[in-house]
Length: 290
Image (cartoon, rainbow, N blue to C red):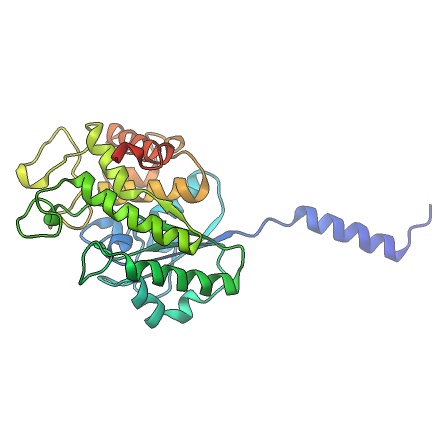
């Protein structure tokens, strides 16, 4: 049989297309201290595994996400753009060139009370999320966007004279979730029920419900010393929920000996319990917090 140069080239092209590895999924995390892990070692953990677009050597929740992906056998290229105390509108105005790229996935995390000046008001969040989504889809029409519905701040619930004073951790988490849902509908985005995962952990007895009433050594503390930011346990739970929502992988499959939890000093029982809380929140779409 005569082998022509054309046939050889076709065969070589087929071989190369079969052997070439699939390109890594790209994901960008946009947020503030709730994303970069303020007040916890999570902030610098795994910084060498991710790309900090602001060159601040932050690992944070994106670093945990990358670590989970590695252990799950997934190839993800993880980047982050974070700045403390900032809204989504600030990121769009001040860091637009870093966002304006063809990402496969983007996670958006708003300020802890949505609007810093009108706590609980989602008007600006809805508008800014839609504007960012339009920017992202102009670069990649297939980009998958996830919005983080963040956790309750105990300093705004258990102290007097605050927006959610006299309510409960469930109420604030659900208020933030409703506003995030509205923003996500406009932006055609998914929602990660992180705040309600905190509630799942509290209701199941995994986590302490009120950091102001003393330390309960039988339950993990989800918040740091300021009763505002998360502890390492809280950031770990956030990362689990985001990982599950974005990848579709059940966080329980990471197992009791998950590496990042080991680096953070969690017991195997604590690790499994937090994975279960994240799984519950995803399975119920946050329903365990309603």
